[in-house]
Image (tube, helix red, strand yellow):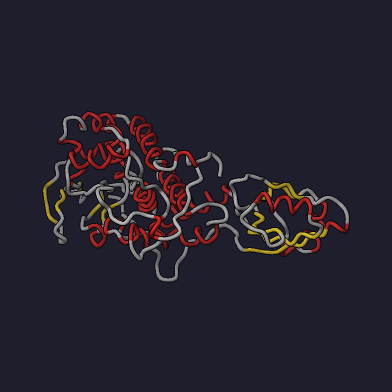
Length: 372
């Protein structure tokens, strides 16, 4: 049986990120010569990533200042006191004679993905990062609003204080903290980071390579999120009618519901957070179709946790299923999809990817772009 690693960092322990830190460079065009910097301009960004140092004033600066040398992959975050407006920053690079540049080391999409991969591999925290994105985006309901905006960062009230989100503002965001501090908001919004972190986690754990689009706007306070969890997120102790009542207003059909439930192939329930207890599968850090195969192959016995929550346990392996999981087998419309995904992992991956992208983009589709 696979060991379920506890993703919570030990006291004082953090997972490092790629070379980081801010530094200053001063380029004086009065001396003559070209600037010697190629940058990747995109109006939606807040930074100007350096694509190449081609000599000129930048090359001269590097020769004289090796400790603060300009490097490919670093990003310009401020030009002569202006930050957050890359159009103005770029114009200043062209028009101002003396450029006082503030830069951040190793701040690109590739560095970000590498840092996320390292976090998931070292801390085995992929499941909780998937849950973070799911609970951020899953608040959407047609006609009632809600969208992925990282409102859980604020715990005074609203989404960050919901019982359904227990562990996310504390454990998940603590794990992400070094990456958040480096990349947010200059390179990526918090909400986009949560979506990307989930998709990197899915891939690293063996699942499909889910594409991520970018442009989600962050909540600035708890008031930008929802006040109450009024039927937005599913309860594990309810059956098929409840699942449809939760997911249909988000635009999902029966096949989507069964596919999204397959994310339970990874992770476990924590008694102190949800009241439920145990992993769904024997390999809870492997994203595959085992959720369905084990559901069909095992016999589960009803039990009640010490927190009073009903669930079902497979005695020999210690795995469990929630009432909402076994409802997929008991419902005549859901069951064929359980059988399909148990027999064909590629069909599961395809259906999951389609439904998961929709979940992550509900309520914000019109503002998203393909490139960070």
